[in-house]
Image (cartoon, rainbow, N blue to C red; front, side):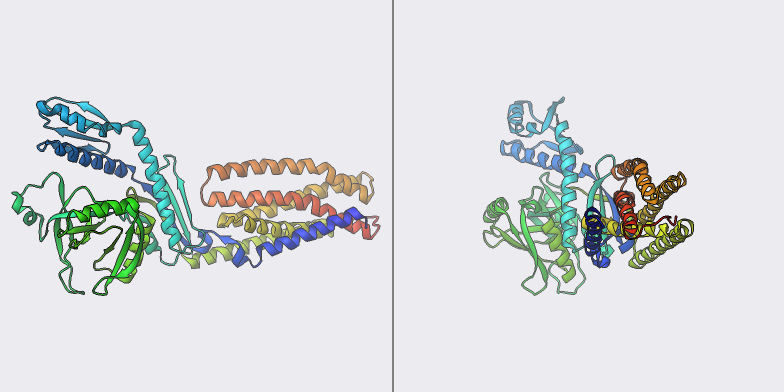
Length: 521
């Protein structure tokens, strides 16, 4: 055996050894997709209009406070669209004061003058685009943080859809799909607002002292009475609170489960520097008043402010231990900037995934067995060469899937089966060419050398064409289609190595050990 052939044989053995080490044991090193492992597949749309509406209403309330500080108290404010609000009733004599108060708003909104002291404010187009983009990106990051804290192995969270406002979430192996969906979709908007009146049993009772008219800078928020004993049926009450929150969930630094003074489950939270400053100012100026802790539009508790509070607080209520754990997780991950709607939902049970694996492996082994029988029957001992190269091809393919952390899906198993077919096709081309060279009167060694040399470009062409098709599938496909494209691409590359390099080396090793006058092909 010459030195070059020896090194080629050693290289093949090294590749096989590294490949086996890379994917063994497969149950630990090969990453299974949703359709094989079971889990949840969701496609959600971010309602970006919610983010625009929130920004518009917040800006409107800030303008209301600014004009009231200048003595304009009888104006009418109304939100018309997600990107537009209007102000009516500006007196002619105070028009200049109103315009001065609106200067800061005009950095974000275009002002339109109307008749009779009426003004319209429309969000600037570039700001609309930016807020929509930010809403989707923030929702993506928030969902990703929540999913990561759920402890799901190898989750997938990615943007999808032509409009770019959809998010795909795949949670392989998730134990409680409903809990995962609830946590992902929960808005978790935390607001701390000063209470002006309440609690009251109804909105009408709440507004009796104000002649039944809701003040323009306030709102009625439902909540649960905290006067009953633990275990009693919760009674819905209403609080009159200021519209502008003293602190929101954006000011949170951390949240974790704890117990309240009655040893009931609660959530403690801490604020960042800016939040602590605002919280300290609000509580310091309103000692003796109630502060409503509002979560997703519902008052969870309304404790009395007994002194200035800076960076810590607690959310008490009728929570279970699991609800406290989930609420802490949601608050830590941040509030969603907009609501989400489900466009697609698919749950795959682990038993169905296991059945898919069994069916896929059975199909692959069945196909491989038929190929082996064909090769041995038609090409005789040379078929053994093709079988060995195909087995090495599959070993390398599994290893590359593991090293690249690629996900094995049910279409990926189809890619495995197609790889077997590509391997057979390559060997058939080589063997038929060798038979032609032998029929032309060449020696075994010359026929093998000419067969591989003259078929190489043909094999390269077919594989490059298939790789281009796989690249398009990966670029424009989603989910399972990408899994198929990934497996096919790796299989094509490894097939070029095994059908040309490995198969030729095996033939030459055979010839180096015995001077064969004829070839069993």
